Amino acid sequence: MLTFPDIDPVIFQIGPFALRWYALAYLAGLLIGWRFIVRLAGRPDSPVTPKQADDFLIWAALGVILGGRLGYVIFYKPGYYLENPGDILAVWQGGMSFHGGLLGVVAALLLHASRNRLGMFDMSDLVAQVAPIGLFFGRIANFINAELWGRPSDVPWAMVFPNAGPNPRHPSQLYEAFLEGIVLYLILYYAAHKMNGMKRAGWLTGLFLVGYSLARIVAEFFREPDAHLGFLFAGATMGQLLSLPMLAIGVIFMAMSRRRRTRRPA
Picture 1 (cartoon, rainbow, N blue to C red):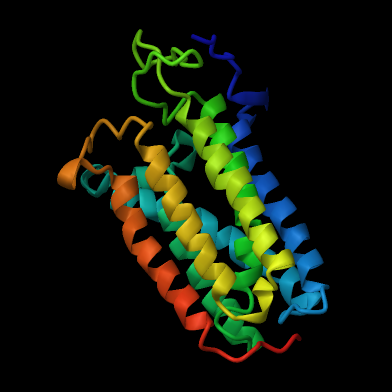
Picture 2 (tube, one colour; picture 1 turned 30 degrees about the vertical axis):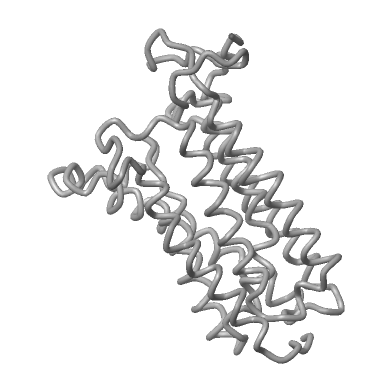
């Protein structure tokens, strides 16, 4: 097995203020994704102007943080937070849900589209292309925090994670960083730039939903389910169950996009 690189989750601390890798991952994902979106908005086939893309950063940040936290509260620990409502705001203790963050971003996209008189998928097709960047950084931060570890395994690259018992485990955070981050980004890049994916509204949004869902479902087979939830219906995990409707919606979006006329650029 490999030795787990015991990295301090706190980069540095000054008095009560501490900068953590997890927070830096969110910040890096938002800022790098924002700059990529502005750059994509400058392409001739973009339905969004660079200024409209530039204005979306604050909306995206609120959607990711609020949606991610509320999603974790509702999907993963509703009973605990019902008894301890004061802990809902204690985000420094951990607990964010991708599916909740996705719903938060969807709400932000709809509000932003309404204010700027954009189509439903005009902004989301750009966001879909850069979302894997944030996913990659987030999963690397999970690995540094030694959280969301994998199931016990005897593969040569298995690791013993702190607070996870003596058994070597799959580094499932790295699997997810690779599938949800690198692989999904390359697929979306190829679809957008080599297959003219921006011409059909909603096609890239649907492709992202399908790609992420499949990557998450596969990765969950190697990831230890949350201790307080365990395996749920038919042996599936919460992450797999939440990914199924996301997969179906993505397929619908891709099918619907083929019936629309070619989209006009901004």
